[in-house]
Length: 68
Image 1 (cartoon, helix red, strand yellow):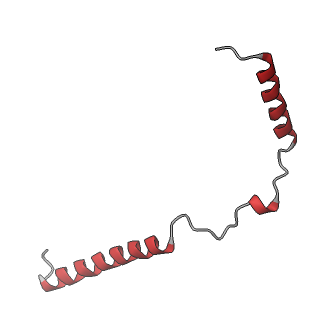
Image 2 (image 1 turned 60 degrees about the horizontal axis):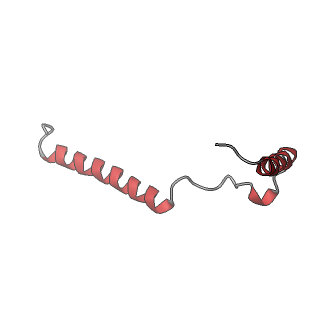
Image 3 (image 1 turned 180 degrees about the horizontal axis):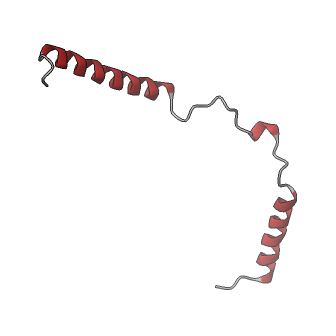
């Protein structure tokens, strides 16, 4: 697949402009470090399930006399 010289020159100019802008990212686009990868609701649900299942296992083991 061949492209015209004009299209190739336009792509080359766009690339060259981006090369000179490297490292000069404005402060507004930089992410802050306080963002969590998961939401607090999902994290709370996960903790609820893990702690709830462990408590349920402890209660079941205690009522069966240790032989589950």
